[in-house]
Image (tube, rainbow, N blue to C red):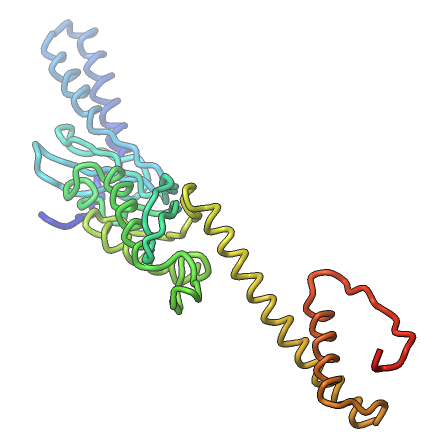
Length: 286
């Protein structure tokens, strides 16, 4: 037997009635007949009582007879089985596992802190009970291994100065990374009969030793991007101003004065602080 076998044992309430009948009947017979032979019947009833088993909803019992797998009860109820069966309880409920924060290197070699949240349940009781030593510990170890592998496959973020143009990153591609993580963990846990219901990144950040440097780097990248937009808009505004002045013939500017005007406008539009206007009370040449 290498696969799970679902069995439906005898009704526990019927066997409870037979147990009570034998037990109390034997006690009554001893009192009435004074015969010690009915003690054997009492011992038989006690042995029968060992076979009672109760299975709760989303629970199961794996049955063994002297080391041989007999089957699994996965339907809730009150049952009776062979008293010599050993009964191993395995929960079929969904379990939640929040891994520890691991320090791993991403695709670029940057140390990051990462953890995962995993929702899983036992799908095959035979594999969970006999193919691995401890299926709960197996889930923890293999999940950590899958997270380490996943973190090394993707960069934390994209940086233009490194020539990286990754479509998927740990920080921005949450859905894609979670799908890859779920697939990786599911492949690892299938040997233990574990079904992965959901897997996602629970915590993600740069390691403490590089966190400040990476924060400054992200801020610098954001500033450069903002400056690029500002300059792009300023050039467009200066171009529009010169074009409108030329169309309406408000003032006739030579190339030198156009250059001075462009310079002044660019300083005003691209400066960090508000410009202080200076009123020219003389001519255009002074």
